[in-house]
Image 1 (cartoon, rainbow, N blue to C red):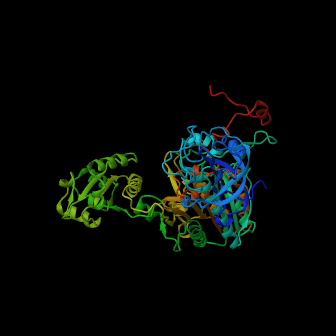
Image 2: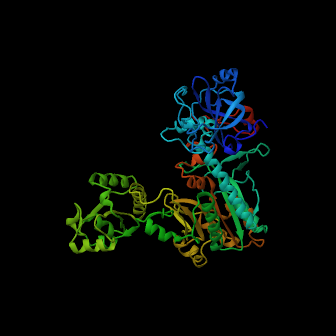
Image 3: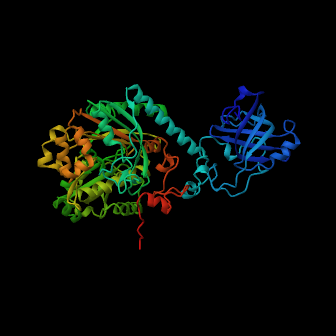
Length: 620
């Protein structure tokens, strides 16, 4: 080994020991007679000192050539820092290593992305600090430095090998490792088998576009990278492996958002002879363990459960953030009685008038602030935002108040539990628009009014989703989750009479308003599966071509089964309090699905294309 200890390991107990450390020069400070270097590795920082009498004049002179991100090995003696010079913010801050020898292992160009958090200016702090004053790089080995701005994300992704040296990125990847280990341990304790499924499979219509891989040995044929291991894990249940789990890589060629990636990792599991409650109860235990081990949070289980219908009625969204209130209240019946045409016309034509009571909102939003909220909901399809202030006498006041009788205003106030200082915010439109606009508004109000602790985590389940959504453009039903989802037993007849009212045995895990995972009980008989395929426009011949092996397998004693997949990247983002899922992944893609570091995707040479029987057609 080139080193005897890591840069985060030394304590007062090692004083007097001879040690060898290896790492990167984080900062250096020249005080005329010698040099102070903060040496960094992924475990932490240690101050190493090039100073007489421990260091010879030759060693001191050679040390003055060091620059940030040079890789060095130092040999020396652990010593207590002088009185008053300890750094209590640093785990190794009580000691330093007084160097008698060092080796330069590698030089570095001036880094365009500084591991200390901001773009390098090419200038180093030499002779700027007195002994014992800590450079910004010594604040902590695992936290970002206050007041330092990061360079652009594109620059960080281009030089990801430098960005990954940052303390926060290292902390995130350590968190990711801990989460996955806790997951593996938990399911091993519950008798699950970790089984790998193929990466090269058959293209199947599961929703998003497949990434296709041309076959050289089967000209004109293609493999597809898995959108999920869905079909394989169902086959494993039919094969009798009643508890399967896998940390699976998945691929979807879809339009990206801040919380999506073309390739992602999920914790995938499947169980036989279970119902939805069994799976949710099992996951409750996992979530409680993760919350306790990773964030020190004691969760009460079972986790709260909302039906899809309840979530949409109360919060306007199927993944509501339950760290705060601000529930939506339906006022359509009252709005129909108003002389205010914006309300009455919508209410009488089948639309909805719904409201959020922003408790004590008057202190947060002036008239200009309300105008900004009106513009905001317009971005989500709302034609406007009606409002009332609740005055000290409890009466509702607004520029539109004259269109309402005092009795009707009193009824609004009673239904909305209005108190002096509250701000009542209404959207009148189609049900879908009120959901979308008021959900966005609720989220914005929660953030701006600071209605929750940003460090808090709230976990819940949303259950009983609709089986199908109707695609008006394609004039057909589509699966809300995927085509292998089983309907609620009592809703099975609705497959033939009223598919839109059919509810699924589906359940989503929601964390802080984000869908962290989703699962379903599966269809385990071929007849029901074919009925669902037919509803989705997947005709028998197509079903046989795409899913024939599954339909056949279902006829050989398939047990009742179901499962769930948790998005590991998203869980890391949530547990790590990150704003961008790309920061939860070591080597992510941009929103255009590009790897800026390796410049993938890239062109291939003509010989490779010929071997695959592929010809590139000119875009002209």
